[in-house]
Image (cartoon, rainbow, N blue to C red; front, side, top):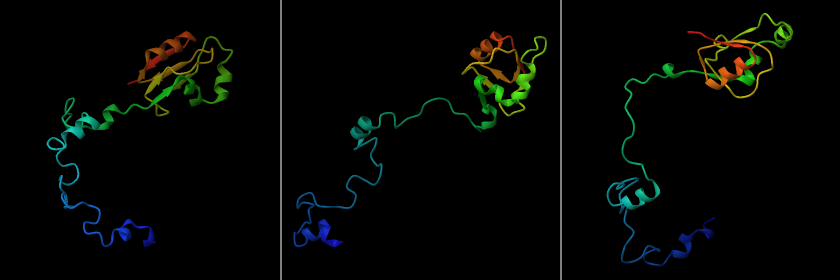
Length: 146
């Protein structure tokens, strides 16, 4: 194991590879990230721009529940009800199935994907404009739930 170490070759050489003049001292530049705004500023500005300072507004007592809004895309909306339901309402023109996204744990409906050409009533707290457009395009309706 030790045969491979550089230490073995350096035995007998006075400064052990660290030079006579500069000398190997403990922490000549300070420990860790010291001097980022002082003697190491060039390195910090060059390789880590934007490391220092603040940005934005402070939000005291930030609680996450205010922003909690699980999403579902249109291509998955029909998976919230059974295939049997979809088949039942397929040929009926006067009534449409109701899909309650909030009951399934989704608050916001987004517009990715396509809907089958079949009217459907979708209930959710939020709809993206694209989702609304696609739901109405197949003859459905968007119902906002508190």
